[in-house]
Length: 478
Image (cartoon, rainbow, N blue to C red; front, side, top):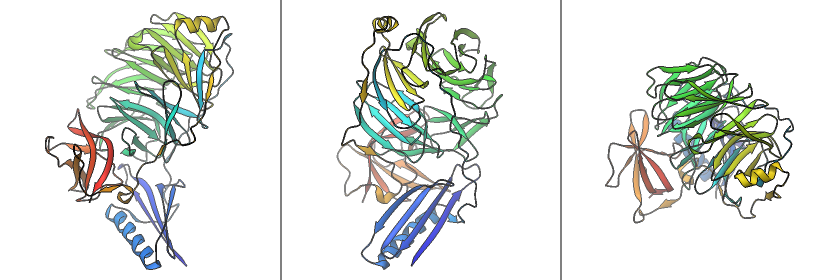
């Protein structure tokens, strides 16, 4: 005989929209959890006796009830709206193929990309994020609960925005959900600047959330299908079917609006300009100061992605016909080449290499040096290496309960101790170790917070806005 307890946490405008189901069958306890409407994840534990299994289940249920979960009927609430970008990809019309150095096939359509000094990141629709060396060697895999919409960086912190409405911090050894977005937001794109999350959605709205996952402000857009959001100290730049709109970072109002030639399908930024790739075969460069149109870069098909070299010296674009372009700053087209695979849905340039994620789910590294491009235009390209997964690839998944976090009896030398403190209806995390600003809060996994619990982290880094970010491992202090 088995018993099942089903709970839900769904708060209007509060971001939470998830379920927790506990089934006890003899000595076995099965826990299924995730966003409402999804299959979720399943964990099963076996205990010495049926009585101990019942006690463990009761403890899990009690913990969730104290966090606000309540009994519910499965299927009683509508699931979060999720739009998976449907794109067409035609064969390239370019006469030559780009000099691809290596290609890593992730196995599912991929949108997320980030390339930094140390590695390349790629996230796909299956919820998998891989890190690779610049030479293509696969280093690690993150397994997230739902499809990855995009990967964004905020200084040296890396975040993955997923279809479950959560934004996961992948910067530490333990990935964790740093933000949870309200269920009425059908997420299209994200950006994070100094801990502030900016969300663009299907309805063309812009929603802004602070580092403590608390709603700050929102604006209805001048259009729909907002595939672009970029942010810096001076503004949040929001691209949609009606063009690009800049808003004051504090929500103080609209700074400027510029209609674009076609709906915005992708956005990029440099210190003084934003770049909007549009469905009308162009990339347009707009001045951040006032939205003035500074240059137009003409392609032959709808632009799915764009990027620049530092300072905007070169502008790159990927179109719906599996071609990639390079332009001079003034708009002169320098070259057009086929990708050798699908269309580029996202891209980034670094150190004379152009990294693409494509409609066929591959991360592609293109040699964008002048010599390699000149050779490719004459029909000479290297043989692209097909990167394979290592047999023993490290895999990391988010912790979903305090019990899944390693426990230590003492804080190692040089580590930092933080404590969960009840602050009204919310659990805050503050630093216990000396040498830190005591009033500042810590961006910390919500799923493992327990009132009064103390945790050890490798390091904390201060960020603008009066909070700390976790770097390194997280362990519970016994």
